Amino acid sequence: MGHGGNVIQELQTDHREVEEFFARIQALPAGDDKRREVADQFTIELVRHSVAEEMYLYPAVREHVPGGDALADQEIKDHATVERLLKDLEKADVGDPQFDALVGKLIEEVRAHIADEEQHLFPALAKVVDAKALDDLGDKIRTAKKVAPTRPHPGAPDTPPANKLLAPGAGLVDRARDLITGRGKS
Image 1 (cartoon, helix red, strand yellow):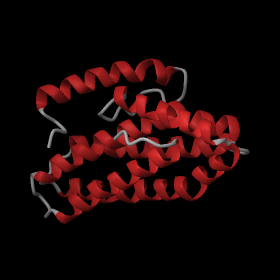
Image 2 (tube, rainbow, N blue to C red; image 1 turned 120 degrees about the vertical axis):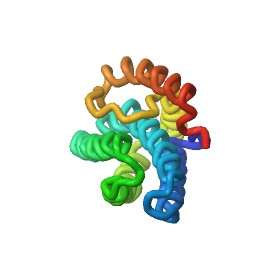
Image 3 (cartoon, one colour; image 1 turned 180 degrees about the vertical axis):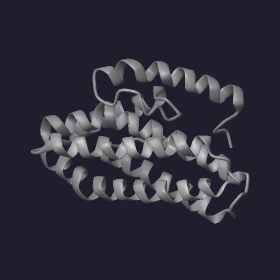
């Protein structure tokens, strides 16, 4: 992920990529080992995306959008739910029926979150923030995704300044683990 464009274009492109991963995992039969690979890929992308939003998008929403605190709080709550599901999925065996149940619940939660962002949050932000600021936010989101963790860390801080301080360190450790294990390389 790292597509270019303003923050809204960047994040919407991420959303489409996650939907592609969901279609891939749903096309595979239950118990297929390739489901783990696809789950690892969408986990990496969802975690990076969420961390970047928490670092830059939601603070901008709080600052500029009327009622932005409530919007940002709800989005962060949604992220926490998804992160817990991702952590449970990470531990589940692909052959266990629980794996499929977690994938189904995760897809449902993420799709609801995407719809909410695209129908409410993004239009609200676009109304109050000029094009230059949206472009700058897009740059910050892309930079954040490069150093963000690739594994779920449900206990990690999800608001600045703590998340901006700790996420790059967790990201470094996660990427080192991924390099050693080959996770996410398919």
